[in-house]
Structure formats: structure tokens, C-alpha cells
Length: 190
Ligand SMILES: Cc1cc2nc3c(=O)[nH]c(=O)nc-3n(C[C@H](O)[C@H](O)[C@H](O)COP(=O)(O)O)c2cc1C
Image (cartoon, rainbow, N blue to C red; front, top):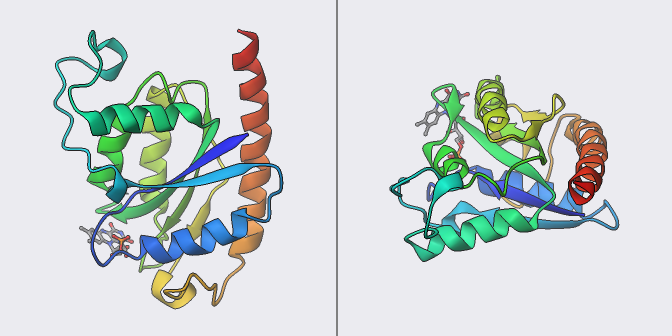
């Protein structure tokens, strides 16, 4: 099984980088599963400007980065979105990256590791992402990790300083992996 971990913030001073470091280190403990970090900085997608929605593009994408992005999404069986909350929603870059693809997201599960400098921990952005990912025919998980006060919780090296986030992640992963296996097998049958 392959799980893509998508880092959804691209600011030069982004706290998402420390969350990604912590998460990738924790995920390495899950044996037999391939985790790949997809940093949206490496996929500089302009705002979506194709003549049709991605499920009905007659000649594919007009830009190479989009072709590359869609192919990468297609390789994965499930997803973890690293989510920061901008004005109670997901970042524009993450929404745009979701919009770029359709078929490759379909019938696959997704969970969320959100964070914020405040106490809500990105929960409101995750709620919006659950709605959005249903429209992409994905299966969003109800379990997720919400890191509060990220600056005091994970340092720049990705070291966890406080909180029961490892336990939260284990529960979220147990659920995600169940669905990843179930949906992979169902996709292969149909
Ligand atoms: C444009 C913008 C909007 C924000 N809106 C929220 C918000 O609605 N709720 C929240 O808890 N934090 C909010 N924050 C604070 C973020 O939680 C904090 O800056 C976090 O580090 C953002 O992730 P990033 O550093 O990876 O970009 C906002 C930050 C920015 C830059």
C-alpha cells in the first residue's frame, strides 16, 4: 500500500515543515507501507485554468506540472493531508491542488493532520476538507490529528514537545489503513 502525505502550506516561514518532519518520522514505524511526502512547493501549480474540469479534459492538462501532479496522486492508495487553517478554511494552495485532479482521487481514503498556532488546531479547515473530499469521491476519515499551539508543541527539527499526538496518530492510522486496504481491494475487483 502506498500513502501520499501532502504538505499543504507553501509559505517561506511555514510551520507545516516541522509537522511534516514529525509525521514522516512517526509513519516510518508502520512497516510494510510506503509513505511519500508530496510538498506542494515541488508542484507549483498555478490557479486552475484548464478548459474543463479535470475529469473531462479531452487532451489532458496544458501544463506539465499538472500532469506530474495527477500522476503522483494516481500512484497512491490513500492520503494524509497536512492541513493548516487560514481563516477557518484550508489554504488556497491545498484547495487548488485538490481541484486539479479528479479520477485519481476517486474511491480512496483520506485523513488529516492539522495544526495551528492557536488552540483550535486546524479543526475547522479539516471539517471543510471533509466536505470537499466527498465531492472528489474520496472517503474522508472521522479520526484525525489536530495539533494545537504548534510552536510550543513541535520544534523546528520535528521533535514532539508535548501532547498525546502519537496516540492520536496511531488511532487515525489504524482507521486509514483499514479503509486503504478495503478500498484498494474493492477497486481491484471492479
Ligand atoms: C492567512 C492566515 C490565516 C490564518 N487563519 C487562522 C485561523 O483561521 N485559525 C487559526 O487557528 N489560525 C490561523 N492562522 C494562524 C496559523 O495557524 C499559523 O500561522 C500556522 O502556522 C499556519 O501554517 P503555516 O505556517 O504552515 O502556513 C492564520 C495564518 C495565516 C497566515
